[in-house]
Length: 363
Image (cartoon, rainbow, N blue to C red):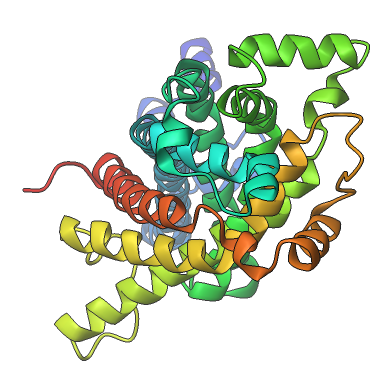
């Protein structure tokens, strides 16, 4: 009897005790009555209650595994978007830096244009110095800035899709996400952009040297490096919104031409055609650059104006009004050719590299 009692206490089924003693064993607690009950009816009852519980646990386990896989996929997509944006931005800046230098020098030469009555020629701009000066800090600063831009854009699109239930690849959602991501982009990039413009306008010899001089003149306050930040947002927020909006519209149009039954493209559905990415990226960037060239002229003049100038610009709108009144509407489109070439080539490079890194090499 002592052995039977010990066996029951350690959790053996009471049927063992009944076979040893010839009497049914009592359950140790009232809550255990279902598990210690015997007989055909009890077995059926236990099976009927155990089957739904097992099925419910299996469903919960499958749901948890699905949520875990979904979180892993989202993290991989987030990191992939950041890497694609970083490589695309740095590649575009490295290729287009000389053209950007020529454009900014032409836009900054206001005194030459006013004294001679004509815009400076490319030969005069080339004689100002090496157009590749200051490229290294710009390319390295493009890596974190591009990563922040694309990760923020993807996050805003995902949150908008979850909150409103709309497509994450629609033109309106893409424009909103691009405008939001552009603000975060310039939080990282703007100090290097200020130094780059001063180097390109031959006001300093290096980007880091220009940043150090600005800090020294401003009492080593970090806010000095963000002077004129609003001027960049005036140009780049509408530019990026228009560029990515045109890109989504053009990709949807090409998808409809290839498949007339498709209402709009989905993520990665028709991105295997890389020439479409390059062509649509070039066209979208070209259209956006043509519409925002006056804002680009105002940005360059406001950010490169020296202190103590009699005719200074208080901001973008003040610069646009003064240039339009004093120099005429043609001056607002100074550097349009360089900007058009740079935008079309840069759009093709950016979207091609982005799709290559995000999806992988073509099969």
